[in-house]
Length: 343
Ligand SMILES: Nc1ncnc2c1ncn2[C@@H]1O[C@H](COP(=O)(O)OP(=O)(O)OP(=O)(O)O)[C@@H](O)[C@H]1O
Ligand SMILES: O=P(O)(O)OC[C@H]1O[C@](O)(CO)[C@@H](O)[C@@H]1O
Ligand SMILES: [Mg+2]
Image (tube, rainbow, N blue to C red; front, side, top):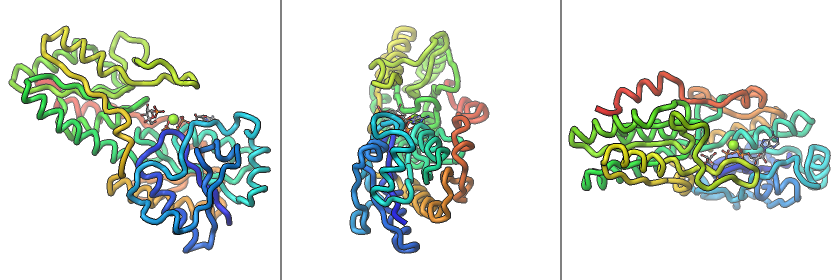
């Protein structure tokens, strides 16, 4: 078979490890041939394709980013869009299958195309770890490691100045990165989209920590909405597709904390640092296993499904099930973390 790989949506450490594992396994085990679509679905619509021989993927397991490039192009948009035109393009290039590596948006597009009869399978990716059908997505562990390291550093400078330090991390709809990095760095408050917390409560936690001689560390996910607010704080407005460009809530709560408590407070927004660079060992292994499993799925013609990890097992999940809701931080995980906040 000739298999076309694409990476779509925000990039994520581990994408290259998926590509490498898929190509190596596909060539060695099945004798498949591989190409890559450049820049996500845009490469599919424009027929922008690169060859992926074995030599092209060597040494890729530990490399950040994606050698294919990525975009947020909708496969139904534009003159080349939609299942009929994509089918023509696949035929023209003798491509038998598409492996779409992406988040819930990318996989929603893949699901529609598969429903329309195209040979598409999926590999889940996102640093946010918010896909319900899989216990973990690669990129998450790396983001948590980067954020933890940053917070360890914020704590030493915070202690030196006896300041309150705020760290804003990614997490559009869910607080997994905030929860895990906050817990691992010993944060005194963690604010996540799933839990509405008042600024009064945040300031109480901060004051209690400050009064016992420590420098408070507050971790906030970009999608956190303080109690009394109706929507996310998007200091940079909206993107082309209307989606709010998040970032700004850290600065907002910093000002509020300083004004209400009188404690000198500084914000650091980690932003895309969390998505850059080499994946951790955990993410390399997970991404590699996803790449291997995706090739097995294609070889079985398991169209309309994606690979996932449940416990330590690689499983297959129909797109419809995979896209049925986000994996939010459950109440018990928040209650557990909250024991360590404040005094
Ligand atoms: N239902 C859908 N049908 C077709 N295309 C879709 C659909 N939903 C989203 N898309 C397309 O998929 C693109 C990628 O989705 P999105 O930007 O949410 O990234 P993602 O793959 O979810 O990754 P992440 O959100 O983690 O960066 C969107 O920009 C949009 O063009
Ligand atoms: O790179 P962009 O397009 O600014 O997207 C940022 C978004 O992507 C993610 O990193 C992954 O979905 C979100 O946490 C964040 O809101
Ligand atoms: Mg998305």
